[in-house]
Length: 186
Image (cartoon, rainbow, N blue to C red; front, side):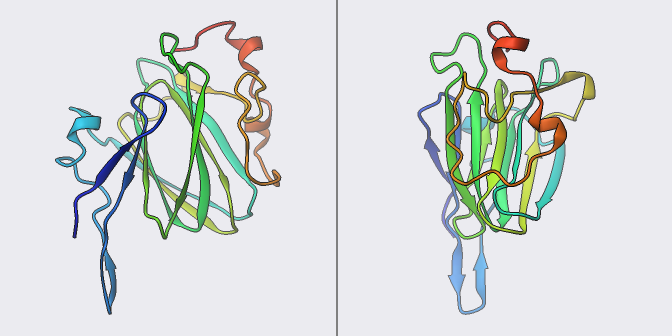
């Protein structure tokens, strides 16, 4: 079994981690998380919460969510069944890539881990039916710190790969960046 391979993205502090599974006639074994191997990107943070989601229909969107300080969190996201187009938006006011987004396909086959730091909104679109996701969080959920960016905000212009089939009522009506934030958010 090889080491986890950390890949930089065009957005500073946003990473994709590739997993090198050991495969034989029985199947596969892979390291999905290793604090020692990921120290350079997670620093002294600790996993405080692990969540799971299941989404039934291809084309569904969940997101774009984040938490404001002092409950801002790093998320590490993996698709454990099916395929998704996973997206992060840079909301850090002093960043050179403020309001830029980056998307990556996560799947049970490619076993990639998307590491999304504090100051980014996160969401995904399912690329097939019956998708399951696993999330590792470095902070506990705090309702008062909950924030979101609308999935189709023209200030960001995410290019979703599929026609949108499902979205929650809550995610569909998040305020636009210009309406709510009038400037930098984090």
